[in-house]
Length: 91
Image 1 (cartoon, rainbow, N blue to C red):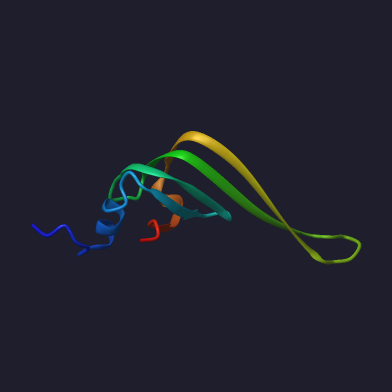
Image 2: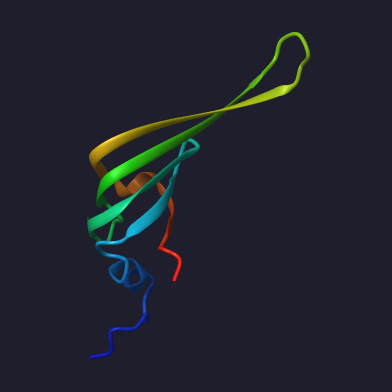
């Protein structure tokens, strides 16, 4: 059996125990080590850094203000219905 990429989830299988980037709904981006996943893209990540980007309009100047906040978590279960994109590590 060939261990290459034949189906989309094969790319995720090859990324097990490596750091992946997961783009989520709501302008959230997760970066962490992938431990497990299933066909629904539910995932278990460790050493996670979550980046949340929000934008506001300044009431005085009417300029867009973009704010980025980060938080770190030792372990996270990601529900697959919020996943937009999974990026494997750069190879």
